[in-house]
Length: 251
Image: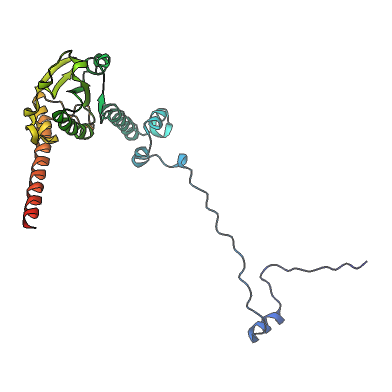
């Protein structure tokens, strides 16, 4: 029985004869010796050095779980920063929890309005479907609800809230805080009548300071901050409307 052996030298080695033939062009160049890329272990996020930026990337639940982390307990600055960051995240989640105009019924009123937490202001719209003034004011409140998610906005059919409430008093806004009425606005004239805008409504509600809360802090915006911001928006809208009218007349 014939046995054939194939001798294979170390990769990259060559004979003197082959080297001469390559110099003469009779053989192709030697292939490059394969070299695997250097080993680089993937980064384990749990092994990263704890820092302020590292804490900023954690969720509230993760920050709570770091209470007994030795890497943080041994660093007074990081522990204080962790506590402060966690408190900020919890406060933001607690305050900015609304953002829309909620439809309620008479049976919901006590729970949603009268029993609202003492740090929450509630704006109640008494309305009727098909009433033009109610529809206009509702549009304004929907914009304000999105702008001030720390304030609770609700709407309720007028006769569900107050039996036999006259339609000529619509729309009506009631402002509640800590279970008590803090402001009453009967009719659209309080907000500029047919020229009613979200900014005009916000400025009127500022009389019941501090109704409007943008959700970024537990105490809400100051009355002056709301007046300044809404006045600026009102002027910008007025200027833009005036410019649009001039462009239309010039055409």
